[in-house]
Image (cartoon, rainbow, N blue to C red; front, side, top):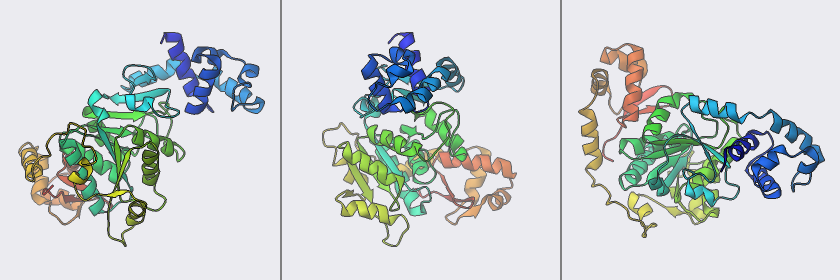
Length: 374
């Protein structure tokens, strides 16, 4: 693709009112993005799905779009701009109906990421849900799967942490542009994901998190993975949208059972009633992929050995906090006092311990030592 076509693709991508479907219709009608970007209102009105009422606004927006400025902003943020057709564009997305014409990536997507599993669930999840997401993500990572999730609070964050703690790769697909991280408290987690995978978005750099963005984000979660695991979901959870989209794409869908009276049980139990496979262990997932070259799962003692290794490489502040942490949740100020640390230093050390999979952050600003039995 020559430079004019690349810039025109980005220009159309930045245009308000042009999503992936309309972009495809424009290129099909005009033969190229460059010709479409220069078309007048009368010519645009002839495109299927458009009409005279929309074309003036779209034409004006096309003229206002600045692809050079977008490329400069991406470069300053350390994000690569990948056009569909580029070698770096994920092969899995090329099969997606109305695939994004442009992707933004911070970090790296490698061929091995084609063997991926997505893990999704509630933002307001339980400690049980976090445990299961981390446990399954760690297990999938140790067998060579890349773990894909959405960097949201709750289950998504636990899935990324589980993969990272196991030394695996993870991709975070965002519902906003890569000029910022959402939620903001996941900034350090996002940095860790970039080191062992990538942040991925189809939205222009400065687009903020909006409700209408997340169904589009969810279709990428499903498309980038061979299967989707749902851990805790309400009856109208976004995780169920991801599961539905995965099923429609012919991907595997799995559900982790819960207590019948738990807030996150309704969605997953509904999936199970509809025929989705109930899973209790890593083996339940792996048996659905008999044709893949999967590394032998680590033995039962592997998580404990990983934890011992991590504990041997702690900073002084981290070690002091680990001495005062136990299985009973405690707030930051209490832990800082017990460890004899300033609150700011304790907060930073706890964040690092969380990324290492040794500590879990709970609602209300409380922290608890993570189980090490895998």
